Length: 493
Image (tube, rainbow, N blue to C red; front, side):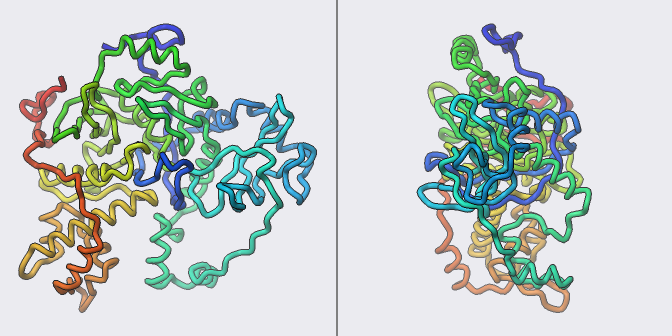
């Protein structure tokens, strides 16, 4: 049983934050994590169903500045006298917001844009929240004035893609492929409304409101803004129970909670266990608060996630590592209960300490195994994040090469789709990226020799974490009689 009071110093129950959500997704920039211990390997995400209302935007915007000085100090900082071009080392001449400066980062000078600034009331020095140009927002951080250097004037890049866009010409196939390797959304398809919503989202979430989160035995530096309630924002560290996902501000309160929390596994039903890996299916309608807290946690590591509170139409599949203490959350993916667009995955996330262990690939594989049980093809929701796109392409390449190496005789795109549950469009784009398909007389033809397949397989990494179909105990939701799952899943012990 989960306790029923959430106030500090007392036993607390799951938070029910105000209803909200986030606007549509947009492309991410490639980057690497701030610390070697938190290596970026995976997260991908899909779009949710609802947009961020004005009330949440206002909350997020006011919660963005860090504690010292608060929003008032940040606003006053913007009204301060203009900065000298020599940089922001002096409190009398602070760096200007939305300007480029040379910033010391990992022992080297890197061009960074000042996103926000605040005046430290104790030391009287300026602190700057900077975004490193050409890197993902997960690396954004607060820096002191002594790391800031000269103002930078950047010349506009005259790339072939930009030149084609400026001249009104269509992108060539090569230009588009190179662009798609980095960007997950075609800029020519973004309508003005989507662009305006994306700008609003960036303004509301441009500054991380939580710097770190303690989850189980790990303390993780956060990557992005997450719309936790205001009283839990603007803190250096947030504490979470790894079993019931309750979030707490103080370590002593967490210790008291751990002493009485009897949960040792995620909510829902265990549907798969092999060795020390276990999968749980959680219905967003039945475990609403648990799933909302899971989404808030994942948003700390996903830039464009839009599903926070509207969790009822979704099923969540949570991956755990099992030991004598219980089932520890590794990551998860969510999917719509009914998807008219054949989406078998809406959002996917692997926590930083568990990345580069092939857990992300396993979650992708698991989503397609469920599609096979449902006897339907599937595809992830778009747009994918930068790292998610790379992970999916790696999975699709591996599956297709393995199938082509084992199969003898003619094989059509439709045959491959039925055998793998991968949508035909994803098969075509993957084979095109490998140069194994040609378009001739209105048809796509697979053109491949055994040597080509062997060369590709030699470059593929061997997957050590594989799915065992015999360990899955699951019945598709469409075949279940109401709430009676029968033998579809064994209840968690």
